[in-house]
Image 1: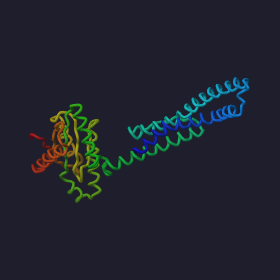
Image 2: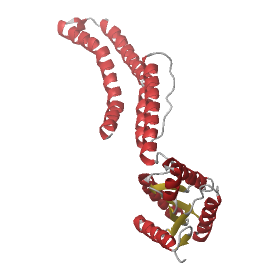
Image 3: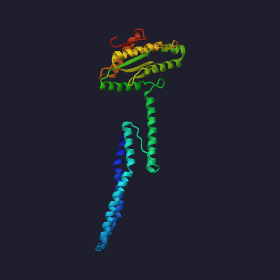
Image 4: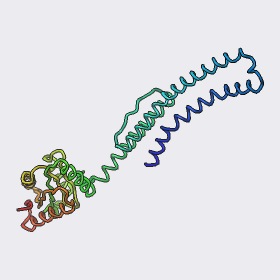
Length: 286
């Protein structure tokens, strides 16, 4: 990427100057050769030739300046394309390049635009595959780590309270044994869908591994614990055939603390809840 940015800078800063230098040399070298030939061969004695040469020279300079200005403007789409590519790689912001017709530059811009959209779609799919659990479409472990780091950073900068919950299903194995693993998979999907129904923007659920999930909930710690208790009670009441029982532990984020320590405190609270009989939430202080 560093090499790419360097090449685009060289293209933007040097290619225009080189092209204009070629135009200048190509136009003026014949005139300079003519003047040199006149000086060497003695044709400079004809005073009437010099006004003509002066007019030609002036017209050449003006014509060259106009040609260089026209070339600079004609190359504006190429500069725009280079800037758009740099912006995409620096900011991951998908540009939209103008459609300039069917000439060579227009075809180039359309090709760049089409390929950028293809690359962007591929990157979105890659991120989705890397960060999401394929079964539940919640964050996977790596996605949880990234989301927790982003959420904690935002909570600290905005001075907003944040609570991390660790939730572990108590009865997934009995469901698998009684109804099969497909039913167990459906239970995990149901749990995630149920959580998303009440989670607010900026809050999330992720599958940490197996039947263990992380939830990040904003707001005061007591209110967050109340919302999670209400959710757990709703899970147990859903469907007589496969009610869900889960143990959960919660820990309030302390600004600046190591996120591994935050997880350790929430996980320890979850194990206390499980040892107390399960199907409950224990938060720090309970």
